[in-house]
Image 1 (cartoon, helix red, strand yellow):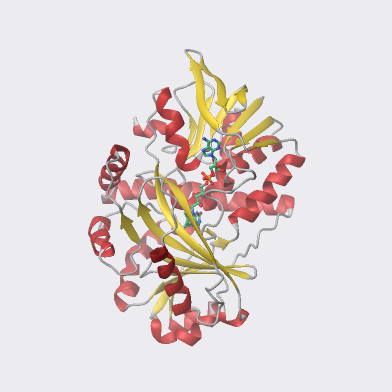
Image 2 (image 1 turned 90 degrees about the vertical axis):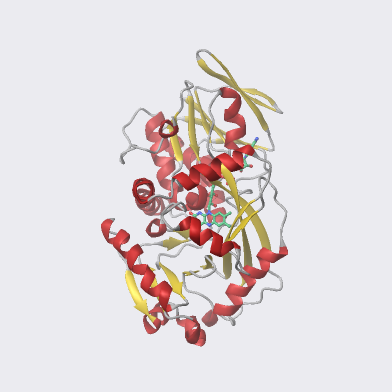
Length: 417
Ligand SMILES: Cc1cc2nc3c(=O)[nH]c(=O)nc-3n(C[C@H](O)[C@H](O)[C@H](O)COP(=O)(O)OP(=O)(O)OC[C@H]3O[C@@H](n4cnc5c(N)ncnc54)[C@H](O)[C@@H]3O)c2cc1C
């Protein structure tokens, strides 16, 4: 079967790889000159099934008001006359109940845990390297209130049987020795030993090379303009380089997926949630993080990626604008210099922004659509890197007519009907 993948971010590329492994003929189209040059380029690097949870949860609306008033706020909203933004925001609010949170979290954990296992298998099968580390992640609490508040999260982790350790100051320093220099700045942390880290861009580029060696054809520098269809289903994909035909079409266009779906009568509740990162070279290795340290106060993740430190965070609602804002850079610099003052200099750091393709319930949208031959692999929001390998695997299973190894309940677009 010939499968056309629309988009070569981490999701499209991973789907292509697994499809090629299953023996399909695969073509990938992307407007960029290479894979992973948009949202998959410089994310925070966490492969974190342990933190797989929707942003919409009980108490979040109140917290959001508090965050909006902070100097280094994790949340920025630029109100716009964009109906999609307001619809998405309202739908997110509706997901802030305990009952919805549990349903959404359950779906996300199911995919994320499976994805981490697929990634391990993929590493074993291919020897792929991407500055990966399997040293867990540490959520750092600056206040006693945060430390005590973690009891709620721990109950959830226990319910989902996610291994975890609640650590005092010394416990945190045992896993992240560089924090000894700033021990007065935090009270403890919650460690998830099953989480991993790695460079999503390096992974996607390396996987694309493996996919290419397995026969996948990548066509770069081509903009997709439309999906042609009639009563029988999709007929072709329209691009600025002409029509492309296939037997199946997979939309993996990240935040840009809804635009192409709307003319087909499918309203995807995927909205861009802008985030920022800086990447700096490590100065003194002993002053750098070992893995990911997630600063709970500012919701900023500081991750070791080989000889570099990646600092990522902020959720900004401002449509598709990709402007770099120095105030967001200040927040990232503040966190890394505050916790890892010897880690490296922020002066020459690479500043980047990307648009998380977020659904209001936090769960991605995978699988068939009401249009024949058209499938979706989008809406991975804050956790696309975490969920990529599992997504690739289940999409290849669905397209190949095999039953995926995880239950697909609640992962498809039908849940919004
Ligand atoms: C600051 C930040 C930190 C993050 N941290 C983490 C983390 O620690 N862990 C984690 O798991 N996730 C994290 N994420 C989320 C993760 O990066 C995303 O979920 C993931 O990259 C989405 O991948 P994607 O392939 O769906 O989208 P993309 O990477 O955006 O890929 C979509 C592709 O489609 C192409 N495209 C779009 N429109 C067209 C068109 N019309 N024609 C042709 N091509 C088109 C684009 O060029 C692009 O290559 C973070 C995100 C941000 C912004």
